[in-house]
Image (cartoon, rainbow, N blue to C red):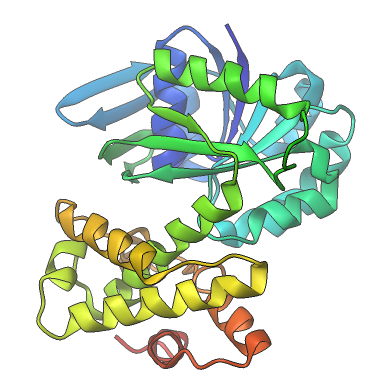
Length: 314
């Protein structure tokens, strides 16, 4: 049985938290506002693929977390917040997190969260991760809806080639716990590569879906928008060279085929746009554009869609 802190009980964190609590792990959730009030009053309800999971677990805001818990109380701390909140939560919780050496697993969009966590806490405490083939959203306070395979891929960030890393035993414990909780989990020897492959998909469909209002299936099957999706994926793969990674046309083709095979999913960025919330543009399209500029290469699809969204069009 593990003690797990889930920072961010939204669609992704709420689903994984419910799965782990249902399997008997001690889970603490953080949230705020009406969602937090509902979690404290009624517990968490998760609708997933025809199932309803209901669990009563402690839910707190960050002030209460710092007052009532030590970071060392937990076996792992999972950050499942929007990437737009990473810096703010690290600014707020770094002194508390610094009281122990507990590992921190990021399950967030983008390729810049792990470096940010490493700068705040040290590289030896960072586990990179990604949630694969899952769509999840808060549909009302205290209630989350999720769909998809909902796999987790995770690994040491940065990886240490041909060296025994102290984080590996913890990763193996987590993998076993996740698998037994019904969460397919894989440990990667090169998590940076996996994060970039996911960014290929995220940059391919998230911004253009927010701009057009179309789901993933509508985009990938459209005679013209499908070319934009593929173009933004290819630009992402090219930008990965700035981080020392070589993503090939085969990688892009594989990721395009993967997203094309999905059910019709509303991307997280489209949902955020519909709800008037901040978009994860900087961590998705912005990450690609910054690295493209560094490499001196063009990214016309990404720069155009990003500019339209930044100016409130769509």
